[in-house]
Length: 231
Ligand code: CA
Image (cartoon, helix red, strand yellow):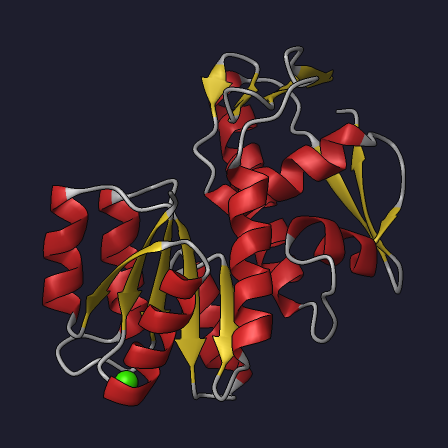
C-alpha cells in the first residue's frame, strides 16, 4: 500500500485529504507542522509527500528543501494558495515535483497522485540502459551518468530525461512532455517544465565538465518544445 505523508495545518483541508486518500487505498500519515513532518521522515519512508506551502513553524519551501535531504526520491506535491508564479517557481526549485493550487478538487488531486505513483512503479522492458553519446540513462535502476560521472536527479527530473531519452533526436512538444511526465490530463502553464529542463541542463553540464566529456544537449525549439541531442 503506497504511503503518503500529508503536511497541512488547516484542519478541514487536512481531514479532507486524509479521508479522501484513505478511501482510495493509501496509507496516510497526517502532520500539522513542519517539525512533525521532519520527524516522520526520519523514522520511515514515504512514496509521496503532500505539502502545504503555508505552515505555522516553517515555510513550505524551506521544509521541501529539508525533506529532499532525508527522502531524495519521494515525490513532493506542494499545495499552495499563492497564485504568484514566483512562489511556484521557488517551490519547484526547492525540490517539489508538482503543485496544486487551492482550492483543488479531490478528483484532480487523486488523478495526480495516481499518475505520480504509477510512474515510480518499476516496469519491464527497461532492462537495457539508454545510451546517447556520453549520456547513459538506466531506466530500471533510475540512474543517470555522463561518462563516468553519476548525475543526481530528482524524481521528476529523471522522468523528464527518461522521456526525452526514449525518443533521442526527436522534437517533443511541451504539451506532450507535460502530459507524459506530469499528468495525462494535464493542461495549463508549462512553467514546471521549464524549471525542470533548466535543472537538467545544469546538472548534466556539471557532470560533463567533471568527466571531461561533451555535455548532452537539450535543444529548445522555440514555440514548440524540446529535443535531446547526441553530444
Ligand atoms: Ca496552511
